[in-house]
Length: 333
Image 1 (cartoon, one colour):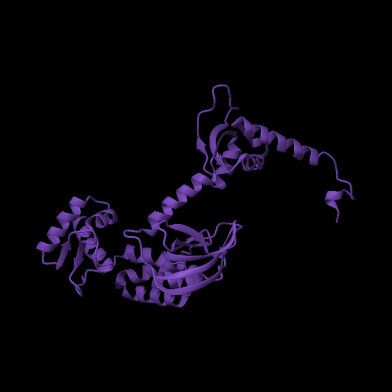
Image 2 (cartoon, helix red, strand yellow; image 1 turned 90 degrees about the vertical axis):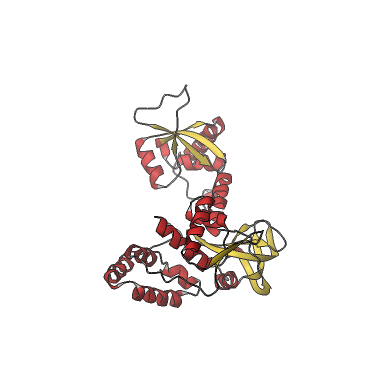
């Protein structure tokens, strides 16, 4: 384990140049003290690295020095091979490069593992789209990607719910989420990093001005935190419902977060039913969702949600109470 960590430190410094003890500790999930001890051992073993103090300090290897301990294990080669997404690579204009890289990767794998690595690539396909969803087709995906790779600012015409407006952005990364492409960027002159949907970009120009990345910015960590904040704000209404065994299965199949909870003292659930906590965007959204499960789900709290379900159910009953006449105004052909 320790030898693997020492090698990981070398690979991180080789790939990133200068890194602080804190950054190395976060990447390796150990303490800074452990990293400092490892650095001392590497120096004692003759590895040419040094550290600098101060705001711009950190550890780095002697320029031009590289470790030759880069051979991959079979499991590592398999992981890289099945992690590829040919569709997104093509959308980014990297389809040919991805195919070429895969061939080089297979060729570089030690012979005993080469065949098994190729089998994994041939027998596993990753489809990032959910069912009944179409992927975004942003008009300027490749231009945005090029700006991300080269670190150049973008001038975009962005269409939000408030209308269209020009923006100058410093792109920091791209994210593909369930078939939709997002640009992670901050507006020029501002410190806040935000998420921009590329399909909403109506015009784009790559500028010559460079991008200054925030120190220590981690795209994956930003996206995880941003997604959690977005989902928490998207469904602020907390509701308590009773669900039949069939509805519990339906909710699981729909991948809706349903958390088992205790029923209010005054409520006696039917035998086999579960009390669940659900989250909704609003009363109307919650009522529509609950009605979609028919009599298999009963809204308990809040009272306003239960009342909204009742109003919608009555309106549905009234709408379907009789066979519509051929010339009913709202059914005219």
